[in-house]
Amino acid sequence: MRALYACDPGHSRGRLHAEPASQSRSAFRRDCDRVIHSTAFRRLKHKTQVFVFDEGDHYRTRLTHTLEVTQVARALARRLHLDEDLAEALALAHDLGHPPFGHAGERALDACLAAFGGFDHNAQTLRIVTALERRYPKFDGLNLTWETLEGLVKHNGPLTDRSGAPLPRYREHGVPATILAYDKLQDLQLWSFAGVEAQIAAFADDIAYDAHDIDDGLRAALFHIDDIAAVALPGRIIGDIRAAYPDLDDHRLVHELIRQLIGLLIDDVVAETGRRLARLDPRSADDIRNAAAPVAGFSAEVGEADRAIKAFLKPRMYRHPRVMRVMDQAAGVVRDLFARYDAHPGDLPEEWQQGLASLDEAARARHIADFIAGMTDRYALAEHGRLFDSTPELR
Image (cartoon, rainbow, N blue to C red; front, side):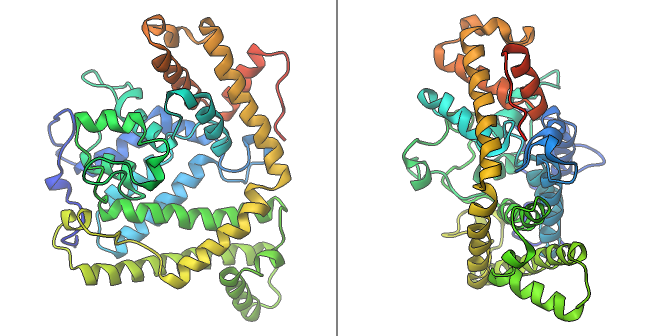
């Protein structure tokens, strides 16, 4: 039974372009299906999570990360009596805007577009689902529901205050122009929180990151099981596993650690979100949006444990010299491609050259960034190899 405060697909605020209702699928289920069948979703298979594609078959890609986030999001939604399809749609789409080579590629594109508003993967996700996917005869984009779009934009909280002034995290550079432009077409209420499905999808992302980055870091031998055992929450779980199974090999121990860690984090989000919902006593999804604070979250204790895990992983994984060396080279590939296409637009594929001459400098730069952001890692390397005499191997 769906909770009163869950988003109701039968009372969605609709799509920018009106469409007849499906006889067999809810509005949010249709959003899931449109994302799954999109070109941008398929490309996630060959986009970096932490390790580039040729470092091994067993590391997470952006697609496998997305699928793990989706599983956690549905588990949270089910236990909190939310709309599982909306939670799934948000999880499936949340990383569509990532360029090749993960955050290294994003930082490189952001620098290339510094004079034109920068590059933000959340804004690029909105750009993909509202404009760049071109599959339907009557509109560009996927024409997703209002609830899915607001969740993609606001899953980390409001972007502005009620007057439209950017909140602190956007104060320096402003709210991305892509988001502001779309907001004029369809008011996403940038000053409010998103529905609770979007809020729990954001925590599903955190849970998946914590678990699979520990798993991948151990697999890559960037740190050892005894190193992560020094971190309070994983250490407690490892201690319990070793006490219960003293002869367990490290491979199974790691799997059991990840399994229990995910379960514990899900349980905590369910319990803490339940406590906040009980205090707020919302009677509708709009009560969630208009609340003074988010309703989804970790408890104070587990929130501290989550920060400790991320603090452990940052220097030992994300900033590990081996990872940084590859990512610095990858960022150079992105910068090279942008400069080349900017100076020689004839090197773009023919369909991406159409209308380019009529664009002003800012729109031209954004157009080139759209092309690069859509690349997979291996296509970016292939293009670099086509256009330059030397291309790094990224390993």
